[in-house]
Image 1 (cartoon, one colour):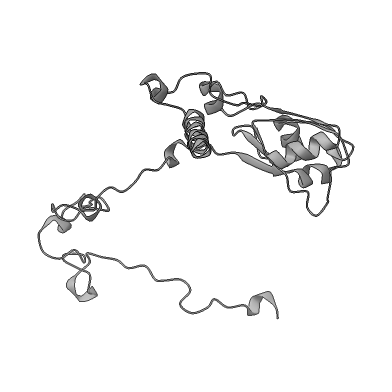
Image 2 (spheres, one colour):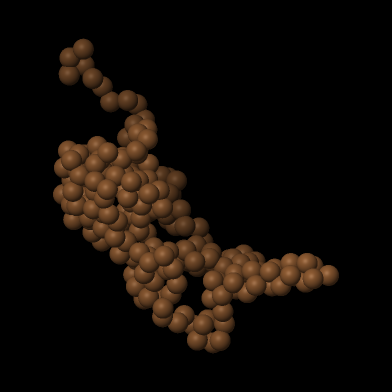
Length: 208
């Protein structure tokens, strides 16, 4: 086949329709808009959910539940196996967001970084890594510690605002949340109270 033998497929390009050029064309006079009314005027557009003035469906439906979606934190996620497979980290060394950007494993530093523990088929980590990231999974911490490396978890912006140190064995918020300021209890306090109540029940049964 030669290039001059290639023809355009029939119907591929739709012909232009000229409106308002006489009634014989089928789209003359009112140009397909019909007679009078809001739709025939210029600027006649409404919102997607507008139903002519009646209460729209999305407002007729009751509100159900709550979502934290507008406040979620989006992370760049990288697997430990992808890091070790890259030539820059094959012999170990420091791992942080800047180095991962240079290696092409994440796009940029606009989002916080999270390291996941998938080794892509390998059973253990063979090189010592010094990882510094906003979030690190528990499996990553185990693998890196076993290989003689270290993990420093920076925490997300929300963690820093709440005063949470993710490197400590007890990462409880040091800064009071609105709920705690109002006199409420933290999740840890609720769990401790429930455990205390269970112990008291067991002791009562033993005494009886």
